Amino acid sequence: MIRSMDHVSIVVADLESAKAFFGVLGFEVEHDSIIRGKIFADYMGVEGIEANHVTMVMPGSSPRFDVQLVHYQHPDAVADPEIHNLAKLGYNHVGYAVDDVEAMVDKVRANGFETRGDILTYHDRKLVFLEGPGGVTVELAEWH
Image (cartoon, rainbow, N blue to C red; front, top):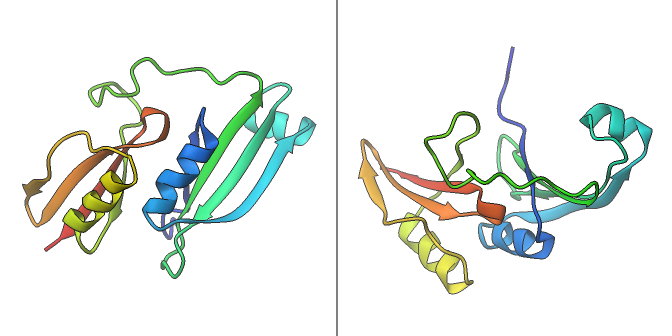
């Protein structure tokens, strides 16, 4: 039986910018390491893997939910030309519940990051999409 979400893993080209983005959202770096060797290559299915692997956590969150940032040194990461297209098949976005969506948008913008549009009120929530690291879409949701 599944108990809860555990983590999301995002491959990024600019590790420092990705850490800064999730830092603005309140995540903190817990682990920062290099993954390499046969064990990781076999597990990930990526021959010759060598990558930075940064685990960021939201202090005090329950249940715990991590963001794992992966920055490939070898092989080169493969860009997804359709990453911005939310109508494509497969992964769409990751969403986080927040207390005050307007305050979070102000904080995100003040730190040089952007939204993908305006705040939308839908059912019992205020929602906004953010332009996340490497074009990944991140959604913030304030429940009424």
